[in-house]
Amino acid sequence: MKMFCFTYAGGNGDFFNGLKKEVSAKGLELVALDYPGHGTRRKEAFETDFYGLSLDLLSKMKSMLDIEEEYALMGYSMGSITATEIVKRIMEEEVMCEPQHVFLAAHEPKTLRALENIPDDMQDDVLKERTISFGAVPEELVDNQTFWRMYMPLYKADYRMIGRYDFGTLNLSTDIRTTILYSQTDTPYEEMDKWRKYYKGDIKFYKFEGNHFFIKEHEKEIAEIILERLPAD
Image (cartoon, rainbow, N blue to C red; front, side):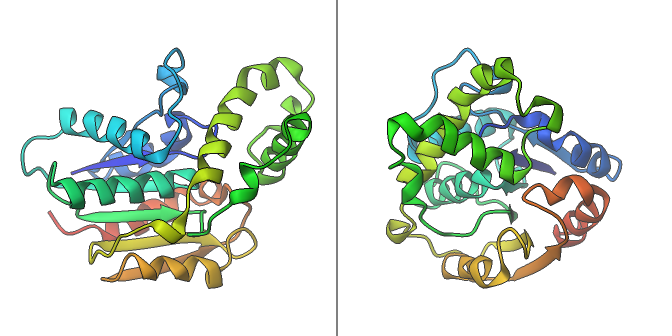
């Protein structure tokens, strides 16, 4: 089985390398897809909304799957919205069979309109502070201007897209098996539990210690959860 993974705002597929190593040893093929403008696709134009992003990534997925081949989805942070929009496209347009499982992590189903309404003269400072607070930037790069010149356009594009996304208009109800991963200090259970509004089947929650990127400290444990929750071959 393949598991397609979608990363956080400003990130790329390399984020999942550690998890990929863990699950590959057990026979699961992890495929981390880059967003346009990110990672291996850095020369492409950014997408401006999740509708366009989901169509783009669905096209990539279809090219990598045989007809009726089973697969799973995993979204981390921004990737949780991405994965959810892909599920919505699949259900509405029946472009391929539904995933066997959806894993969502580090993002509550909450509209973050403030990210779209940051004044232009404050945008760089606000987004820089937000990104650092999440633990996305190594300490040695916090004051590296070359780093920010390279990555700030990615953060701006992704945060703007997240800010435009309205969970109030998300029309999704599915019984696809779902697993939710979270850190109580980052995205509390009380907020993550609201995913039940959209994922109404077999859903299970796992709490971890750590910041927004708790996956990095718990890759082996998360790999075990993924393999346990996926249907047996």
